[in-house]
Length: 357
Image (cartoon, rainbow, N blue to C red):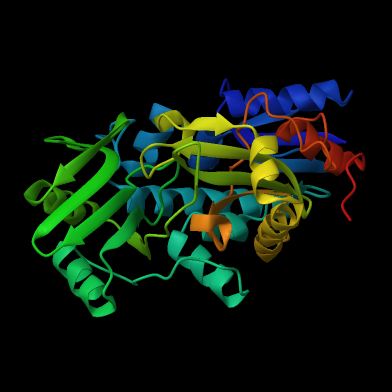
């Protein structure tokens, strides 16, 4: 069995999957760089399993996709990024299709849907997955407020349609002429930049932020009130491999954005399970597995599950194509990947060591 990893050489994602392949006693994985993909010079070996990983964390790739003047921390330009990314995926797909015995571990059409939050939301809605209601297309703050008033909404989450890792996400509250926008975006003369500091813009600055974000496509959801544990808002990232929920991390924060790199903290899953009970925990995992079933041609997805106040409701916020970067996290102790990290579990699924049923 031969693995090919499409990614950026030296990136930790690539290194961790390559380590898992090596630990399984398999031949070393070949790394196919995103530079080769985007330059149109890619090739894959015969009879190989091709894993597509993130093109992120590489300034050269980001400039290639967004434009030569792009900053590696830039939020702007997500439409151009997505167009370039999908063209690269198409080129990769043609290469794999033309290589005897080569097979993709993550379906390229699935990836393009997961990287468009609007399309992903539509897929989940049609499948009956619980998701927050949405507003539809907007072109700026004025349109957003008009649609919020029509629905009598005062709180929404605004997300770049093609963003990831909370890039450009805004938790917005509006009452009359007063508006507050909580986000990790830094507004600079050079553009909108990702930062590691969550801050709140108010009134005119919040309006400006929304207008600048809407230059690229955005996805707007009604703010779903999330449950709290130990005084902090929580949500979950659940990794589903071969149709089964294998790993979960509880993310907690004192502000609405829970991503770990923005100051969110991990809470022990066992502590949460003790609070909510096993029946509700199984219900949540079932929802994540059903969401993943809409991308059944893809080996692994990361599902963001949002528990509601009082634990009575839950919704799926997103399904992530590259949602398995959870260092040092081993599988659920009563699941099929107990003791394995997310990368080892995927290799085990390919070799038959992880049950697919």
